[in-house]
Amino acid sequence: MMINRYIRVIAGVFILISLLLAIYVNINWLWFTAFVGFNLLQSSFTNWCLMEKILKRIGVREEGGSCSI
Image 1 (cartoon, helix red, strand yellow):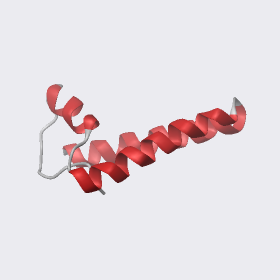
Image 2: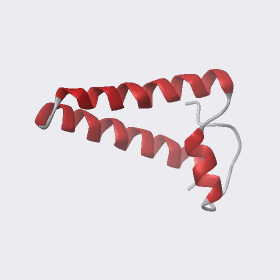
Image 3: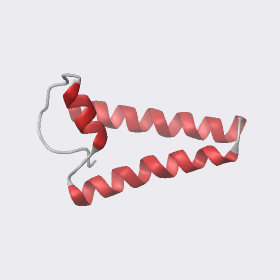
């Protein structure tokens, strides 16, 4: 799997988990959902993504591009 796929999977999992936590634990978990969404949005404008840097550091191969969807 390429780095862009990992980023999409991780972002999707984070959003789904935080939504479930907001429903069943505390509504404030929606702030984490907003944080993930904001990071996806800013990466589309700046072409910089922290998750991309983390995945590169652990050795995930890169196909090209940043984490903008």
